[in-house]
Amino acid sequence: MRAPGWGMRAPGWGMRAPGWAERAPRPGSGGGGRAGRPRSVAVVRVVSLLPSATEILFALGAGDDVVGVTFECDHPAEARSRRIVSTSAMPPGLTPAEIDAVVAERMRAGEDLYRLDAGALSDLDADLVVTQDLCAVCAVDVSVVDDALAHLGCRAEVLTLDPQTLDDVLGSVLTLGKATGTEAAADELVTGLRARLAAVAAAVAGQAPVPVMVLEWTDPPFTPGHWVPDMVTAAGGRPVLGASGARSERTTWEAVAAASPAVVVAAPCGFGLGESARLAAGAADRAPAGVPLWAVDANASFARPGPRLVDGVEALAAILHPEAGVRLDPSIATRVA
Image 1 (cartoon, rainbow, N blue to C red):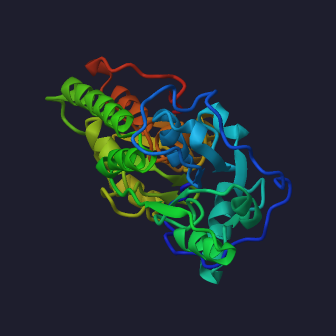
Image 2 (cartoon, rainbow, N blue to C red):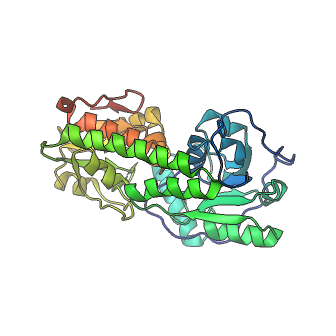
């Protein structure tokens, strides 16, 4: 999950997690992988330590090359069949307030939030490991991966993705395409995503921007950061208490009310639509009175920097400008209050 606000790098790498001792077979030609797309480089064995990167790799037709993933890599469903090499060190069943407290304390103490199964990583004989340098709360940090590979004597190339804006996210698709020899597929995917964004822009053109507060956490409230303000702008809104490319920050309900949003959207990082709606309902009495409160599938279409962010832009446009004719997908957003 890309929990907001804590961008510190966590040192070290975790102990080997149990249960994945068997060696994953070298992927074949079946399933949801390359789908017959031409390749410009030899097939590589990829370990993806980012759910968003996993989504991109499968979308590019390189799913057959993916041999290792994280416990959060659940889209597409086939990704769940790959070896899990990264798990969470967070206790289960915590409330949002408890998660905030645990993350803050572990960051202060320099403790890991993820466990990298170094033994499984060694077993997979990876050529390419995709990780991030965005936030130690998002996924295994690049420094952890570097330390593990050095310890194992593994020569895998490490590709670090660090998208800060919506345009950066589209750029990361092209980067992964180049790394896996699927440049043509990456160009095609990005062209299609840009066309959808252009269609949204055309639909909301001439409409007054709607001031929007996107909550990346509800207890305590957090401002939107990184690419989320870009999503709001692309949907015909004006983000309040957040800036493009900046980190999400802890704020107060008083500050949210003082920013005078016309719409509040709950997008708690790491949660699907049902849980987002539940958390939004629990915060409704603290949200600005009389302001429409929506919940969205943050896990799919807001928190992960991949192709489905465009789904989130379309959902926001439908929420903010219902007269514009952009269809609202009920699996992505629902009104809470």
